[in-house]
Amino acid sequence: MQLKIGLFGIGLDVYWDQFEGLQSRLQGYLQEVYRRLEGDDIDIVNLGLIDTVDKAMEAGHSFRQADVDIIFLYVTTYALSATVLPVVQRTKVPVIVLNLAPEASIDYAHFNGLRNRHDMTGEWLAYCSACPVPELANAFTRSGIQFYQVTGLLDEKDECWAELADWVEAAKVANTMAHNRLGAMGTYYSGMLDIYTDETLQLATFGGHIEHLEVDELSALRQRVTHGQVRERVADFHTEFEVWPDCSTNELERAARTSLALDELVATYKLGSLAYYYKGRGNPANEDTMSSIILGSTYLMGKGIPVAGEYEIKNAQAMKIMDSFGAGGSFTEYYAMDFNDDVVLMGHDGPGHFQIAEGQIKVKPLQVYHGKVGNGLSVEMSVRHGPVTLLSVVEDNKGKLFFLVAEAESVPGPILEIGNTNSRYRFPIGARRFVENWNSYGPAHHCAIGIGHIARKIEKLGKLLHMETVKVC
Image 1: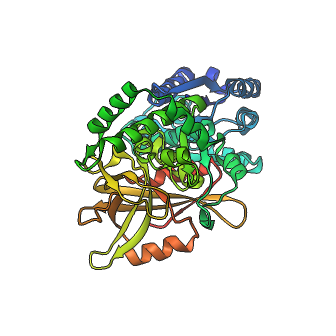
Image 2 (image 1 turned 135 degrees about the horizontal axis):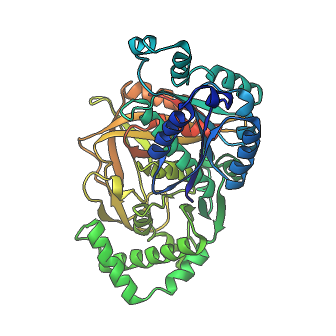
Image 3 (image 1 turned 180 degrees about the horizontal axis):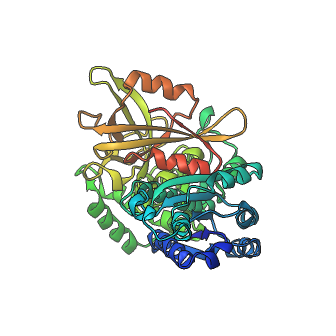
């Protein structure tokens, strides 16, 4: 779904007759904001300058009818809060107040050299964007309206535009989550108490839909795949992955068949993410399906459909968020520490996100899936060296979700070459403090890892979703 932004500027109608040229000047500033918000995947509903209560009432209806996801309010000059509150009150979406001055400072010499005080006042009002913000903040706060501020300059080189871009990106991700269809196939890995979750709480927090799926359906879809399709998908595997020589043709074809069935399942239910786990024991067809699912799941992840093993719905949500930010979002957990190098070793069996891999993902055969039924092909990768962000969606003991975030570096060095995802991460607070601090918030043992330092974007997403964000480092 395309993000729909509501945009308007504010002013006071009595100024326009008093000060010639002021209205058109401010409208020009608003047009600059509009131009910089434009994007291929954004629909902007621009209502222009709202300067009377009547216009504000109409604007509120217009934004609501347009179903905007977020409002950007550009404060051009002083305006009465009564001409602003009705616009956002009816719409009931987050409001970002843009307090953007036309210049870094007033040209005092020019200003004081104007012909008369009337001209001085008109010029002053063109720089008066900061003036009504406290009044608006008071009205919004007392009305229970969620709002945030961006303060800076209209100049596109000003640092505020990076912050504004983060808000836009966070709003896009919130919109993606609100329309995401998450497939839940199978059941929990029995006994992992930390990964159990309240699915209604997930939907109440993020929106979207959770579609419960049967492994039997995936197994049935495998039977409809043709030999020609299998050959093409095996060729795709060789293109996308580094397939090791000891991977048998039979195992590659098994994985290709399941991969194609997964594609059809995703298309049928319009899935944007997937969480799965199923033993498959006692049913040969299902065991064949579930023991050959890793390559197909990895293939999906590279196409923007995160797949979480062990039925980790909370982590499927975290992975979808990271992927929607363009950071990847691979399934991981920490399993050991290297005290000599002060790094934490993290990885997991199952699928990996090949778009964020250091080099090409390796495909290797495993004689046993530890802790799970069967054997087959698995993937081995490290996350690309450089800055990374860890994200966990945590369910607390008060019936709420919150984000737990940490920023680190993926660093080179020896890993365990056992056919799983494996990486080495160095944290600015050190391995010991990171592990203890992270654990203290009670997250599940899985989290999502993505490239880049994006905690500031996740924090903004949390604000839009009324979720707390805890940053460990």
